[in-house]
Length: 516
Image 1 (cartoon, one colour):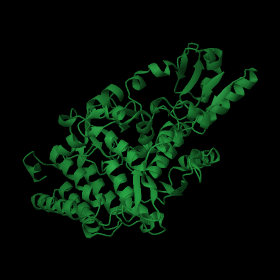
Image 2: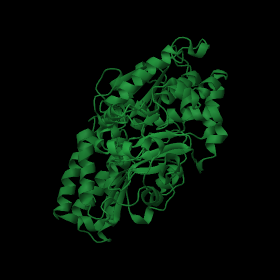
Image 3: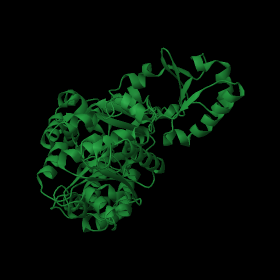
Image 4: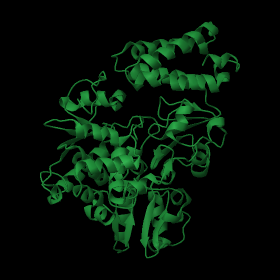
């Protein structure tokens, strides 16, 4: 009898290891032979730890399960799908999962993350085999034709970045995966690294074949110890099986891969600061040009992509550009793993094609606020994303549509706030966050954020409000247009959106908010 208990960090935090031990002990006491598989999380985080039982008709889910539920589950014959108050039904039929389009996350929660046999049985390395049969330029063209854009926030076309590295002559090229997932409300990178590490290895290897790179680095934030452990194990397994190293799948091509642990700086999510950190220096933003695609890691041409960008490549290569491009809308093709967090009843990961709305995500999937109160504001795109009022919740989740709102999709993180939230305090937090996390290289970000906290304090305390509002607007304009990177350049987004859409929280009338 096969059982599945997630080894995902969220499940571990909620007692998955203790649950596994309790199930094994009870099965042993009853002399029942079971096989326990530690899978990734299905993304329904309010149900963790979620236990699944394999039956001839399909997997049946129970959750959230605590160690105190184990005896009653055995008594109810849960091993054969028996009735129990924690029984959720067939996993694949649960609304939260059934309504998704899982492409990048197709295997997460289904396979054992470190079982190469499982990976191969679920279309694993099919994309790599396809890439090995193609010229480098054809691989780049396939990715370009798919419409894949950077999933880390900037949404830059992946194929164009790869084409630049391919065309740049050099004796050494690199592939760098930016896994420094530091945005509030985001956990897709972590879930994928912990739940399906081989897909990331495959995606990076395909990228290496496409541009002529022979070395790659996974830059993972130090706060993800489980992901780092699983990635290192997966790299070792892939290398032993011939999918990494000097002779990839018997092709004669070389690609080596290493995991590097970040030191906890938010700004190292910016690609050039990340490169500085990888080279052993303090994470400080570099001036552009030159672009990393031309002069990147150790001065060599470098592809830098986000986890989800690279993990989307294998399915594009396996099924073709047209298959992937068929999902989405406008210039936003494929899917995005949206992450629901904050004051939400059913928080978790939802992979959907671009075009779904914020309202659908929050209510059809999230079930509304955790408190049962009205939702007031939603921050999309991390701590430096805009706060969206209800009037904007029906806008399609599309890069260009959000740009038109003066907002960003970013990494797909969504943080929900109910009507008890004070947006003036949240705006102040954005400035304070920037002041703390700034690398300090440019004046608009370093000094602007510090002055921004002071100005917001005066506005909140009703000190010379009219003059301070004008000063805040000028300050945000300077940060927006004068900062070297998005750290300072995006801090005005949460500040000005809060001021514009929620003037009452600043003690202003709608007229007073026009300064934003």
